Image 1: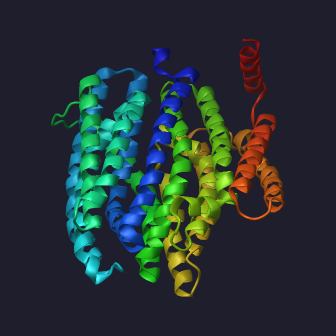
Image 2: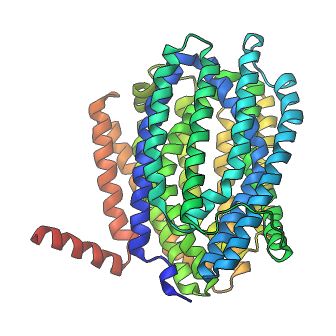
Image 3: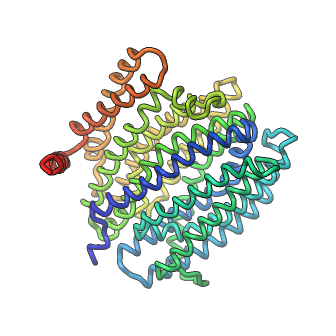
Length: 511
């Protein structure tokens, strides 16, 4: 086994930087364009786009299972260094995804279309526009599903720079469509859907052409190998239930809120998702960079290195998430008012709770990567899927009883702790070398301690800085950054990491 296939820390850091560049660019464009689109479309049309596009994505949970399986098996074979098996795995995955895309297309054009016409709370005057948005979303979904094996190949080969470069083009398309929205004299919701569809298809085709040119396994061929198909489908089918739970947590709750409060509340959810997605994206970049290494180290039975990756990923990702989220949690109203001018009702509250949910989720995500690396996902998928599905009926009952729209987010936050316990338990079941006690001691407790210490200190500073203002926001940002970085250094970093950081600082100072 060639050890060079396993990423060095330097490679992981380099890939993370490329992904951060990509995320920064996309975030800035998304924040600007979302404000323009809100002004151009209005709250109701923005909410319609969110709920209709979300309806299509309810069927994509089927694809999420295969996506995880494809990424895991391609990375595993790449770690083994068997190029012929890698080609067979890609061909099998691509054929499965084409079949799945056809199935989801048929489901969306029957069950999904009925739900759009008969169940969703959409003003009658906007139904024709909603139908156009829905059909374009179906087509985007179809092509997106068949794109998965190509994206998984880029991640498995750790070519994260490709995402950064193509993101420049993607950002250009989004900015162009933003201006075209005001220039084309037609229904703006329909124009928006068409422009987003065109840009999505172009970007997907560029990714595919790159993969076909650069990776010898990325070629279509009709191929059937039961030795590859059986474990991949087994992995996907068991993972399916967990992804169904993820879908219910997101789009299920969105639909429930629509039934009770109409499309305006979906607009608030959409903007909250922009904020938490922007922050989560920075952390997910680090997770994306390190995930292949977790799978590859497992494939060569290097369990100590694998455990080290998971512990470090949890610690560093949580600290990064806390660093980015804290100013937004404390100054959500100021930031959102500055960004959107007139945000939909409940946008502030949805943002704050979503950011808190992300903090909990970040802690246990690397454990899920570890479970996926083992390939034994059945028990975890059943347990986690069941926990996530509970969010919808609990939320529906509470809303039916007259609860506040914030309640589904609160339920989600509480159930995240159960998910964390579930992942730790099932990783131990799948891999005896994993120690829950060690993970809690080295990753969970230090991270929680930083949050417990930091939040009261930052709140005291905010409370003594007067009324909401740009000055107070800057003070909160400075204090939260200083406090979190200081305690992260003192509590989270081990002796070796501290030594490396001090050494780097000394090198810069002496230079």
